[in-house]
Length: 116
Length: 112
Image 1 (cartoon, helix red, strand yellow):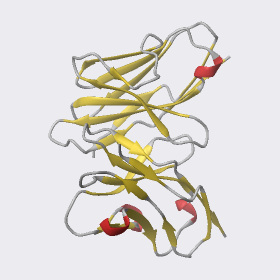
Image 2 (cartoon, helix red, strand yellow):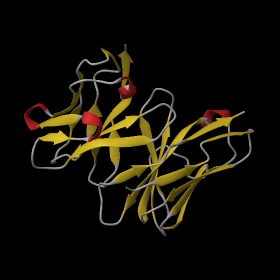
Image 3 (cartoon, rainbow over the protein chains, first blue to last red):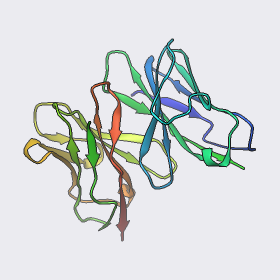
Image 4 (cartoon, one colour):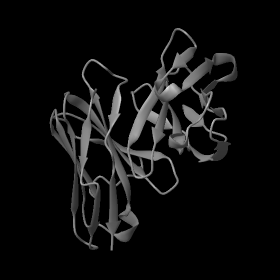
C-alpha cells in the first residue's frame, strides 16, 4: 500500500532556530500534500495544502512566513518552522494524496517538535 | 460549512466487549466519511471509508461502520475489542476541496 515517510520523528531545537520536517511518498506520486498540527489530546488542525509545483495554500490564522512549505517534487514536501518559539512545540503530521485517488489520504507518522 | 462531532471524548471498554464510537456530521451534499485510528505518537491509519453504496462498511481490524443519512451519523463498531484497540479514533469528512475535516477524537481505553 501507499507509504509516506516523515522525518524526523522527533526534534528538539533552541528558540530562534529553524527546523525542517520532510515527508516523502515512497511508492506513489503525491500530487497534493496536507500539513497538520496536533496539540496534546486534541484533533488535527489543517495548516496548509500544497500541490506539486505550486505555492501552498494556508488556512486562516496560519502564518505562512513562519511555516514555510515546499512541494517541489511529486515525492517530497517539506515544512520549515522558522524562528521557532516554545509555542510552536507540537506534533506535526503530513498527509499525501496521489493522482487518480482524490480521496486516498496517506499519513506520515508525525514529528514531535519541542522548542526550548 | 461541514463539521464533524464526536460526542464521546473518552470511552472505557473491557477486553472482549463490544465497542461503538459515535460520529455525527453536518454537510450539505453527500458526505465522504472516514474513520482513522491513531496510536500514541503516531500518524493516522485508515480504518474504513464511505462514499456511496452499501451503508454498512467493513474495514480493517474487524471494524465496521454504518452510514445513516436520516441521523447524519457514521458510527464505528467492533463486536469484540482487543487490548491493541486502545488508541485515539477520529471521524472525518471531506469538504468540496478534498480537505479532511476531523472530529475532536475519542480516546478508547481497554481494560483487562
